[in-house]
Length: 452
Image (cartoon, rainbow, N blue to C red; front, top):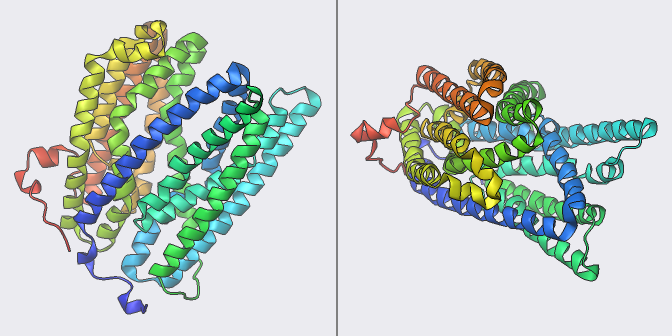
């Protein structure tokens, strides 16, 4: 393959391939939700509350720490690979993939070593019940960080199945099968053997995925001398890492504050409502995965018309499932909550308010992804920081007076503010209308011409 054939002009971006990948991504996400839920239910039954609680505690910490371990590079690769493809910058493409892998490996191993030191220090001065499980399970951290990078690279290459099937489908299935074998031997399952098994499975899957992604990458781009722009990559990655950190604060502060200000029982009930209210956002989350590299490609080619058509096409995919799921949750709130137990039905109005916020979030479109993938992450950073602060303040005011409903109102107001603010910035800087209303009230956008 020669450099002149490695990429075609703007017209090579096909909305037909977008629709195909959207179907694949939705299928994977729906299957992943079902498999993960089944895994949680069966592990809880096999392990009992204490052992399952230890396992989930360690897993939660490794997933949480995988964000700083990744240094923001997975999302950076999605953006820059698409940009370098348009510019036909093969050296930077190879350098980015190799350099990101090395940076994340060093960063995640360093963070793992720090966590090991902290846990050993805590356990030295005071017996720590989670010490041994954490010392065993924390080694999943580098693997999770690297697999997140592989997801980003495969997504940028528009290999959606390769990006998400290994971690979202194969891993939970193999853990479930391995857990069943361990449980079957003596009708009990402890957290330590399961964590060791999970690490082995994760290592095998991460290794296979690494070679598959590298193979696909080398097939698409001819070998060349890598060009390393570490300063540029790290500067962009740190901005995205800060953004993601603010978003986690925005996303989790209501749960933490309900637990702190009302109590653990209310926190559990509120958490069930929060998890359920995320259903309307499933289509938006999935379409962001598929659309992100295409956003970057269109914008790098300065094809704003093509970008608007892609945004409108994505919004059509988001509209129907979001509205249907939201209406179902609003109409059958108590029935849905009763799945968790009879006590959870008291969160019916909490769920209704949260669903409205999530529905507005989805119908506003891919505003956050559009700002990042078009290089306007610096302009959007204040939005994340301010909204995280607003959410904390509103929750502090509303929860003492209105309880869980107050937390839901505060969070929904913040979410709507966040989306409207980012929508204004997208229109100002990117020059496209990101919301579903661009399709509903502009009939010309409904007739989307495939770019071939």
